[in-house]
Length: 116
Length: 115
Image (cartoon, rainbow over all chains, first blue to last red; front, side):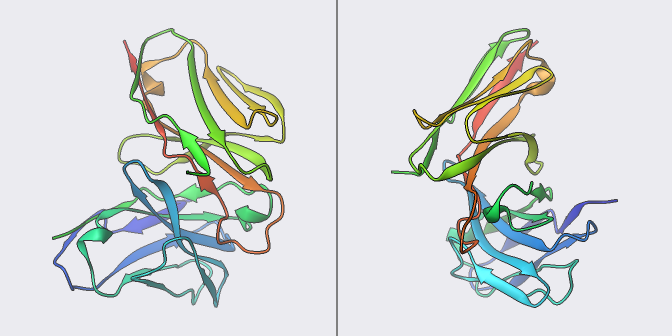
């Protein structure tokens, strides 16, 4: 049982490049989400999904796309990287939507992205 | 003003000390209160959660919620160097019609326990 797996661990991009951050979970969780973590800002929700084929925007969605074709995978795409997207990105999953009661989030170990 | 405020620290204490970590919040609709622990270069992991007001104890850890003051605390007794991490508070409402603000996190307090 690997939990939530994120790849790559580190990435350096030039401004304007695109890339996909991968996230996979093996816990059969319906809810998956992407957060970014910046100093002094805490964790901010980018996009989330409550099941395969269903996605919605979080707090800071601009510049990012997601899709959910399977229960296990939830990739995050940066369309045209900007220095403001330099951050640590975390994928998290839970049994059900944590906004509708208590459902603990399980986090991956993050992708550290630098955009120059 | 942020919905959840948390002192960023760092908080440095000697081994064996009692540690108090705190968050204040402004949304009176929050009902679930959580503490996540994040080791360096790792993802956060759930440490404890509390529903509504009151105390909850788990070994050396005690979570306390005071809804009247909109204030939550995490106490660590007999702190150990292995407790050195960033502690994030998080809270959510019981029922939401959208997941857009599923969880509201504090910015985290960095704790260092010196041997």
